[in-house]
Length: 335
Image 1 (cartoon, one colour):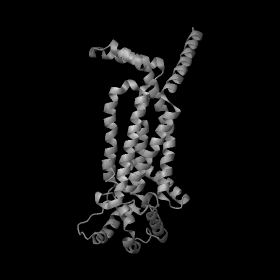
Image 2: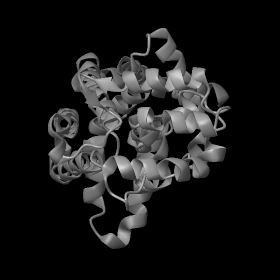
Image 3: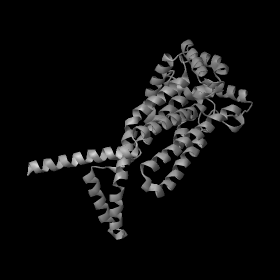
Image 4: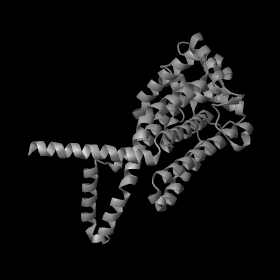
């Protein structure tokens, strides 16, 4: 996360690896803004919901894998009791692998796929929030001239702040925030970049970044009043998502109660880390986290209701019996 923040500063246009993602997300956002009459935050909500829908099959598969692991717990514990000596670790591992092979089970499918997908999506969102002039509005020539533009507007920014040593940390966000003060200077010096159409697009985009009177290009701070609600809501919704996820995991796998304590600690650390990061990124990123957490909570409840542990385990048991009999019949035919 820190590498993303560092890569976003001053005149950078992001991490090279994710630039195709910025471009793709920028095109999608531009399309949604045109479709939704510049309703920026509604576009973010739609983005988030669509992503969660795409992620739903992975989460359902993960739920089924957890149910299968729970069903195999008695057999797993039996093997572990058979080889309590650390010297027999290889035999233990071999029997575990044989068990998984017989059951057609891959515990690694419970891994970090959905989380990695969400992280990649977050990087794309951060990209279009940090670099909207280039990737959303489509001013492609901006980045080639960003250093010269920075030198041009810096004295104006220092005059605005009353601080002769003030630095511009994120140039595209800074231009959005102070466009009225920079406009004549930018148009005069870069008329092919800041055309009438591009200037109007910047104004429209900036207006869309205002939510209930809050400038969502700003970075939240304790002294900034109402905007502090964004990091707080991001923390509360993230905690809610973590707690619900832990409760569901306990119901899915009661035998893993001892592991849940350490998992709970890890899951609680992430919301507070996100809370800290919320002060290092524009408020729009925090807004995305809030929406993403709310959708995640609803999705977890939906999956739990549609695929309750006991019914899922029973269904898997029937499927495994049918599959095992099918394999046995095939073996008989071969003989």
